View 1 (cartoon, rainbow over the protein chains, first blue to last red):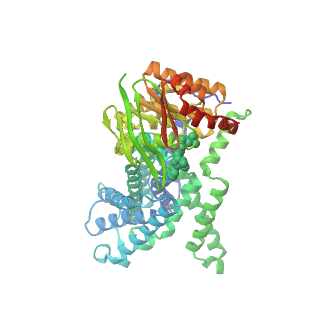
View 2: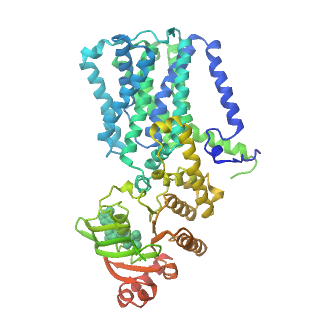
Length: 345
Length: 262
Ligand SMILES: Nc1ncnc2c1ncn2[C@@H]1O[C@H](COP(=O)(O)OP(=O)(O)OP(=O)(O)O)[C@@H](O)[C@H]1O
Ligand SMILES: [Mg+2]
């Protein structure tokens, strides 16, 4: 049995890593992440890039839906705003990546504020439907504002490059995405250990008590919308650079559902859970793609999209029913058992 | 002693129902004030109006000379009013420490960007407020559960955490709605001791709603009695005990209630 770790100062109590083991594991993970593209194939690296980009967006969604308790099916809409902003700025205005990606985030954040204000009085199902409608409206806006968005023909983005260095291969692009993901994780973890994240959680748990403790609830709900859509906008912009092309099909409604299923699978409110949820859901999708295409014939022609929708629905229902704390919940349970073995409590 | 809180002709109507009808009383600085009355008398509704959870239909509420009748509800904490709720309103999935840190919200300044970056200023603020919270944890003797999610604690401990969260707002006036209901004799005694300590050591004015007549007459300086939304008596414990209106309207009910509660 490992004994508990005794913190000696308040500084240690508020630090991100509670004990040396966590620090070692984090370093091991960093080294593995840096080495990964060297040993992996281009295809696998590209798959991981997709996962990391999704994770950036889902970490943001988790702050809104997991931590603050505001269910949102607006993810695809915010991704689209970020993706189109980056694509338009890079293709039509030849702006560099280091400006286009943050611009995508900021534009999405502005839209987040726009969606957040009318959503302040809504909860649960009504909020879900409103945010779903937002995603649909964005698609229509993109299709109709042809002069800016090129309508249904889509936009090809410039090759990703940063400070003169081309990131043309999946392997070089990997490092950019990894860096952004690390920042995204740190930002989310930081927010959650500050008064802002505690206010988010307080709103989810007991909004009346949160208000009585001094939290301006409406304002913090807007903050959650803005931060979350900023994350999604950044992810959308990176998506545009990864695929080198955006059109409305890249941001279909199923992505919103996929994103919510990821945070439910990973565990609502947990940053690590958001990442694990992305890996689980996208990994599962990849495996299914592989299985069905190798079967060929009629099965092979089932559209991957239809099947995905079905699988996401099923995972949401199963997790909510049997493991509401998600994979992180299972992990915590086993960890406690292992740490305290053979004692139970 | 000077007046800390003054409620004047307060009225609350829910549709056709008048839950509070023209109630006035002063709460003096530094005292323990009890609001009592049978079930449905309108006590919690009074607390909700005073703490701005519910808007008053008419009347005025004055805290330390300032009219707070229409102030934004989230500003109440910064003005020095803390409260607990009759039906426990703790943040169940957050740890004891985090629950109490939410109570520090209005004393902190961290912005969204400050939170994202967690730079030296944010870090220093977290450290300082964490220190204050640890002092409250020591005062309430709940060190052993500081990192436990509050939802996993026994009822009595959850109530204590809620008290701690209210204390973390650094209140001048503390509203406690049925703090000891559902507690055993020992827990009740602990709470009575805490409340006396609050008054004597921290000079916090305590306003409490209680059904437990023992604790009310033992520690209160003044008592107001409500029945059917009206204030039917106000005075010291001795005066209240001798008041014919109270004996008639309240103590009759009291006997029924006691048998109900068992
Ligand atoms: N939000 C509300 N909407 C409608 N009626 C309400 C509301 N809150 C309270 N009431 C009514 O107002 C009256 C007073 O209720 P209140 O909760 O203030 O009583 P109380 O004195 O706290 O009683 P108890 O001792 O049972 O807690 C009751 O008749 C109650 O049904
Ligand atoms: Mg009540």
